[in-house]
Every structure is written in structure tokens, then in C-alpha cells.
Length: 321
Length: 273
Image 1: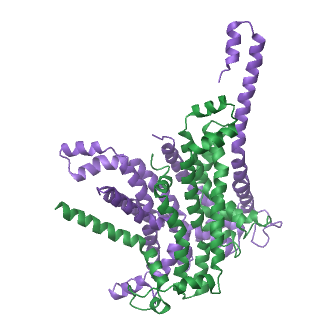
Image 2 (image 1 turned 45 degrees about the vertical axis):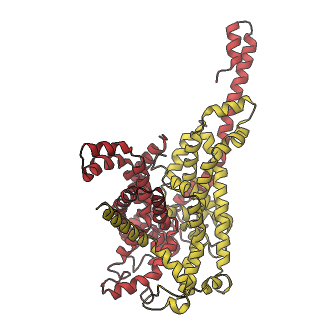
Image 3 (image 1 turned 45 degrees about the horizontal axis):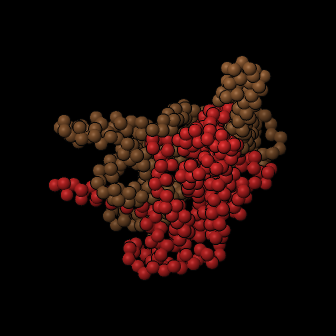
């Protein structure tokens, strides 16, 4: 903001000194304002330094040492990248990586497609009240902690008193959901039933942002419902589909709660996701060196999808219309 | 024909909603059954409701459910206030081009994508010597961290909608930056602050990974408590269901009261609104 004092003083030619003083004062005010703005961000920056940067730095240091939960704060030997090598060649880590990838690749497309179908269905209702109630009832399980939902499924899948087990038996459906053959798919099904509301909400919001006149024009031109969906709805939802898939995909990749509550990663290591692997390395095996090496390997795996996610999330957030 | 189509659509929707909400429906039903009805096979759908399990929660021995509940309330409230106190001034400063603002936004967006378990164990390690393990204060710190990314980005977008002229008018009246934030900006972004507070409350309430890693028994919230019930209470599924129903009520209440705000916050970054 140019100081009025400066402009007047220079224009008059009479008050150069006053002008300079005013300019200095104005500069000082600006500096002080910039400084105040900076100071307002300091608490947040300090908090993040103390609770993210410092622990992660400490963890990286640990990943280079032979640390167990017993000698955590002692003087463990420095072992360079041995922990990383041991984790990578162990097999269990690669199995967990494989489980996480499989879980993500199966669950994400189903959830996004299911969410899209539901969004189109709810959006086709004319009554606003009916739509609002539908949205509320659909998003309900998504608002509940995954671990509480998982505990309820554990009850419903219980072999003796579980509701689901009973009806599977009663209708002679030869599936035992928690057996080694089907437990992975049971976990996926639970994830789909609980998390589909997220892509639904994103895509429902996307549908509502589409100009209705496009549909009216297409209908006048004689386009059928499938053509309209393929030529108008899908292209205009592209951005929303990408965001829903990225967010759900990243979350599915690090799935933890439902596995912890239902199987604990077992039987054996059959349902051990990467998050479960890291948790077990830290608190079951007590090997903090391995645990932190695995954490940084996981971060490394996430770098490329994360950059894509930051790009798409910021692109949308930066364009408020 | 069109009526038939509508009926079919409603039928599909009802089936989907029942499938989605079934764990909650089942928890409510089981929590109201007598012990005999809980273990009856085939499952009873019509029964005489009893409140024994809810009474057990607050009086019977074993796990200290009232304490878990108090912890969840205090920690969720504490962290959802703390996150606003940290993020609102920062969001305002970043919108008004504070030096280094872009870096803060980028780091916080990246933070949103770091898996919880990757942060939880390092925080567990540094909390140890600070005696913050198994304390409510330690858990508040962790939940505040969990809520920072969404809250900061949400508040930046809300503050960004306020024209700079408001600041200039306040400055002419002699208001300092802090006074402007308090008297001008805060009232204008109140809807945004409410959205962020409600979402943070729900996210803290539902948070599991940090609570599992950072607590043992004295600062255990209901989410971790629920998993303890399985092993501790064995087949007392009625009690477990009652605990789940009570644990779910606060989130559902907040969701129903502020549905419009919450949908806006949840879809933030994905939906332009």
C-alpha cells in the first residue's frame, strides 16, 4: 500500500523530508504487518515441528540402528541400512505389501462404481426431503468409527449366535466368512459396505454441480439415457471420480482398523496389511529398527500417488467458484 | 411404467441402506435384548426390550466404560478446540500472504496423506521420556495433529472468501491485525469454524490408531475400549452392543444436527462448493 504521505510530499516538492519520514513509517507499518502475519503462523509451525518433524527425524535415526523396544532410549549400535535390507528380504513385508495392493485394487473401483450408481439413483429422486433422508441414511455408517463397525461384524459373523452366520446356514450357503479361504473377501466386503458413502458423497456433490440445462438440451436432441450418462455425466464427473478414487485408494492401501478388530492380521499373516505389519513389528516383535525401516519404505511407496493426490486436491481447493 | 420404475428405485435404495446400516441396526437390537434373546437361534427380530445391558455398562465391574466415555468426550472436545486455535490465525495469515505460507500449505497437504501408523509409533517413542503416554493430554496432542490438515485447508478456503476490503476498513479504524482477526474475520468465518469443529470432533471421536498406540488403560477412549470388551467380556455381546450404541450416539447426533456442514467438510477438496 503506497503511503499517501509519500505521494503528496514528492508531488509538492515542498516536503521531501516529511515524505521520506512518512515513507519510512509506512514501510515500518508494512514490515510490522508482514511480521504479525508470520507470527500468526508460528504456533502451527512449531506444533508441526515438534510433533511431526522431530518424531519422524528420530524415527529415521532409529531405522539406521539396531533398536528393540527394550534399548529404545539407550545406545543401540549403528547398522547403516541393514534394517531396510532385512525388512525387504524377509518376505513378510513383501507379503503385506502384496495384501495392501490387492485390497486397494479390488476395493477402490468397486466402491467408486457403487458410489456412482447410488449417487445417480438418489439424484434421480424429485423430492428434496426424500433425497436429504437418503443421504443421511447412506452416510450414517461412514460416520461411525470403523473399529466399532468391525466389532459389530465380529458379533454378526460369530459362528454360534451371529445373525449373518445363522442365515448363511439357514439358506445352505456354503460360505464360512472367517475361514482362511474367504476371510480376505469378508474384510473387503466390510470395507465396501462402510466406505462406499465417501465416493457417494463426493459424486453426489459432483452431480448436483452439473447444469440441468445440458440434460434438457440432450433430451430435446433425442439422446437416450445411456448416451446422456456416457457423454454428459461421466465426462463432467471426471475430476470427482479421480479425487474419490485417490482418497479411497490411499486409505484402502493402509487399512488397519477392521483387520485389527476382526482378524488381527491372521490366520498366520494371511490378512496382514502394511499398517498391520508395522504395528506388529513395533509391538509384537518389539523391533523398532525394523518397524521404522518398514514405515519409511511405506512412505517411499506412497510418494508418487501422494504427489498426484496433492496435485488434484489442491487444484480443486484452489478454485472456489 | 414410470411409477413402477420409481418403486423399483426405492426398493433398491432401501436394500442398500439396510445393508449399509445393518451393523448399527443389529447393535441397537442386540443391546435391547435380554441375555436369553441374545443367544437365541434363530435370531429374534421381535422381543420384549430390556435395559439391563445399559445398566451393566455403568454399574457392573470389569472394564470401566464410564471412564472411556469421559476420555472420549474430553479428548474430542479438547482437540477440536485446539485445532481451531492453531489453524484459524494461521489460515488468516496464509490468505493474507504471510511469508512461508505456501510451504505450510504444501506440507500440511502432504501430511494429510501420511498413514496414521507411520506417525503414531514415532510419536509413541518421543512421548515416552516426556511421560505423555497413556495421558489424555498426549492423546489431545495426537488428535489435534490428525485434524490439522482438513481444518487448515477448510479454514483457508473460508477466509479466502472474505474480501480484503474488510481488513482495510478495520485498519483505517485503527484495528491491529489481531483485533481484525478477532472482531472482523472470526464472526464472518463462524460457519467455517463450526464445520471444522464438528468434523474434528467426529474424527477425534472415531480415531483409533493413535489411541491404540498411545494409551494403555488410564486414557483409553471408547474406540479402543470396544476392542478390549471382546476379550474381557467374552460372550457378553449384549453389554458390548450397548457400549457400541452409547459410543455411536455422540457422532450420530453431531452428524444429524450439522449434516449440511459436515457433508460440505467431508467432500472438501473433491467438490467445489
